[in-house]
Image (cartoon, rainbow, N blue to C red):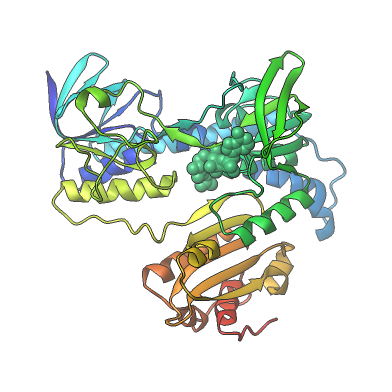
Length: 463
Ligand code: NAD
């Protein structure tokens, strides 16, 4: 039997590593099990961080090629050095994962290298050595959901992992799924020169997000050059050296057709990853979608075993996992950790960015909540015009009687940053009037938020 701990966290993604840091800060003797060669999980290694590096590089490439001229900056020939772009992305990832190693050392968190398996409550096996602990935290994250008939080889048929590693710009990239991954990585490869077709089984993109925002996103992304095939279902894919042939059928039934691609990106969602974790043997209850069942304090049905992040219910977002990690660590240390699930922002890092927090119009209607809506377009925002990014709008939804903010939806330049103002407002229970009467710097993109708040009461000034 090896060293005993207060907490062993299994998985070092944003949920797991943050939980470990907070537990260590609070004086708990903490270890984190990670089998990957580097810390940080999917987000830092093969998800959020490398995709944001490529989104930035590809955006720079597009601007240099198509937008600088309008600013009077003339570049005769813009060339792509994809190998260098990929190397830079790898450097960004490397700096981030090393940062977590530093934080582990700083907080005296033991990194147990290897694959963790729960032997019993209080016991975690890591590659043959059993470690004792008071608490076990499952933070094993998620994996790409497979699709029958579409066999991923990470070369021709890829998940986000392979799509971040391509060494050549595909001539035709077909994306299955118009969700977050499909739109972000579809945007990257379109900007770098690929023809991109996105096949989506629903009749809209970005299910779950406010419908008006999704419609605007589809219009803007189509204008940029993405092709959407909505209401279409992929039923099979055959890969050869020459490329991939996809079988596609109308979702409502009808004649099938074939679509040729040189690369196919499968992005139809993610599912919890808990293979080989010993959950069944330990008697940990799961729900019908393979997620670990927990109570509101992240406790499973087995005493001393907890779970957070993508492994449990809720949006599969790094920041949701982080906040759960903090709340759980605080509870394990005898404090009162808490996550407000009503105020979790969601951001799609296309350009323009698409960002939401709180309830959508569809949700308010379904719940029978009366609301006022205020909208303001970036075309009427001076800063957006100066930047040259006027696509999109801010939409705020406030309770009809109390004026309390219930939802905020932005598509526009830096929407992912702008949404934070509204998340804070909502955490403080602000009304639209509160935001409208807060002095906003001029000229700033945030003024579009203030104007949308004024518009809730029908008194926007600049439109
Ligand atoms: P998603 O759930 O966002 O979108 C999947 C899409 O695929 C949906 O539109 C769905 O209707 C469609 N679909 C499902 N089955 C299909 C089929 N057979 N044929 C065609 N379309 C089909 O999933 P994702 O984009 O794979 O992302 C996975 C998870 O990762 C999400 O939970 C997402 O929140 C998270 N993520 C977040 C970010 C971010 O926060 N910026 C970035 C990437 C991923």
